Amino acid sequence: MFGVAGLAHFVRAAHFDEIVPRALPGSARTWTLASGVVELGLAAGLALPRTRRASGTVAAAFLVAVWPANVTMALDARSPRARAVTIARLPLQVPLIRAAWRAGR
Image (cartoon, rainbow, N blue to C red; front, side, top):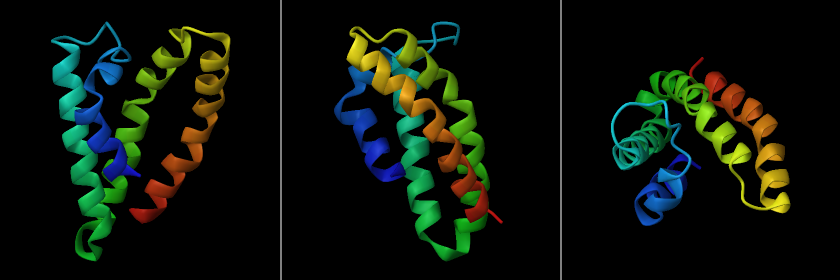
């Protein structure tokens, strides 16, 4: 999941730029690319048994840290359908955070 999401930050950067919370300093593109690099690093770290424990803990923290971007995406959705889908996605982040946390334990 992290690998696909990380690549998507580079392939569809403009889409991710739109959901970067405006309160963050600097450009949205910088945050988009930086989070893509982090996600690719987490994918690699979780894939390797030697680094899985540390990567799982960092992945859980990362997912909590990017939750505001997911909320922004839900609130800024342009259509009722998109808003429903993005709002429905928010609680799904909880099992992802738990799975990452378990990988770190």
